[in-house]
Image 1 (cartoon, rainbow, N blue to C red):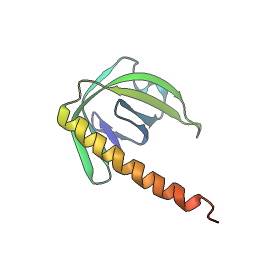
Image 2 (cartoon, rainbow, N blue to C red):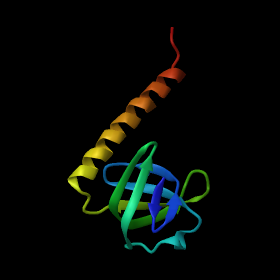
Image 3 (tube, rainbow, N blue to C red):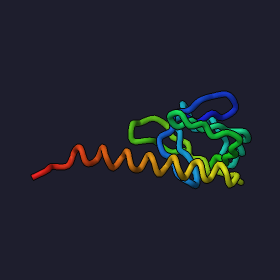
Length: 104
C-alpha cells in the first residue's frame, strides 16, 4: 500500500523509479502534481518521507484505473531500503514461479 495525503492506495506495480496504484478515477490526481510526505508499506516494512510526482493515468488490466507516480528526490536511505525490499520480493516471486513449472 502507498499512502498519499492520508489516503491509502493499492499498489499494482513498484520499482526503484516509481509506483502504480489503483484509483477510482483518472481525475483523482492532476498529472504533474507532487505528493510530499508519501508513505509506502510493503509487508512489515514502512518507508516514509517519500515524494512522488503524478505522471499518467491508464486503464489497468482489471478494468480499473491505475495512476503512475515517479519517485522524486528519494533519500539514499530510502533508496537502499526499497532496493532491499524489491530484491526480497523478486526472490519470493521466483519461488512461486518455480511452483508452477513442470518438473520431469
